[in-house]
Length: 70
Image (cartoon, rainbow, N blue to C red; front, side, top):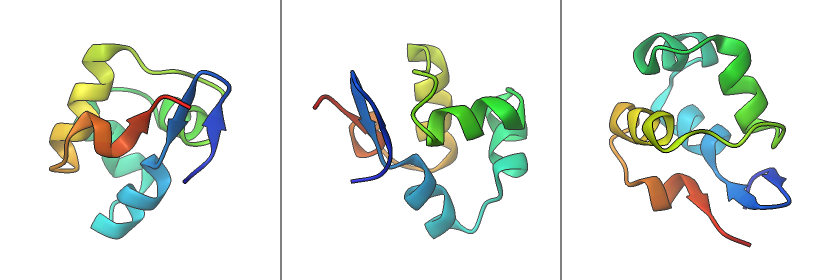
């Protein structure tokens, strides 16, 4: 499993890298800052439902592939 917040485990960094996207490319597609993507990947920020759905759509996966409860 990737890095995690105490309330949310995430695999965002691994899945993003597997698609060949940079943080900048993902942030532009999801319409957020690169810093937001970095904060999510490092477990500092828990994304909103809308943002999680945008990221999943961009990475062509389900939200549950990216984020799970501990």
